[in-house]
Length: 171
Image (tube, rainbow, N blue to C red; front, top):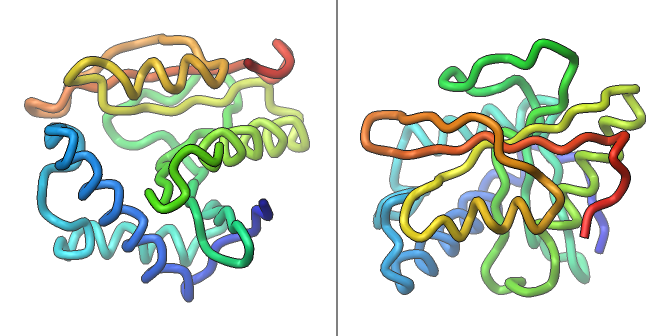
């Protein structure tokens, strides 16, 4: 697996990753996270991905030359308070479901930890959907993150999680 900086030419692939994730979530009866409509059908979401691709924080994981996952690092989103110390914040993480089970998400999160260490930053945070059966929160915990504050955006329940670089590697 190779992880590289994202660029504007990755937008279509990243939108396809989100669409595949939504399709998979819908097949599992899990529409609370991103709904049931393709990510690519929302002008607001397309604009979001274009913004990520035009910035410095997008990372693309590739397997055999094919985009397999995307992570974006940046500032905390508006519904999450900034940390009282320097941090690396995972704004978004998605994998193409064709690569499910290949540890793409874990590799991208480890990349976030490595980038934090390179910057001399000890804190990496992420937020995620905390509804349904809490499976996504448990996923991040399995990657070494621990729960901090909960939040709500309308009806959407969320959870902020953090991981310390100084704590060493996770599971």
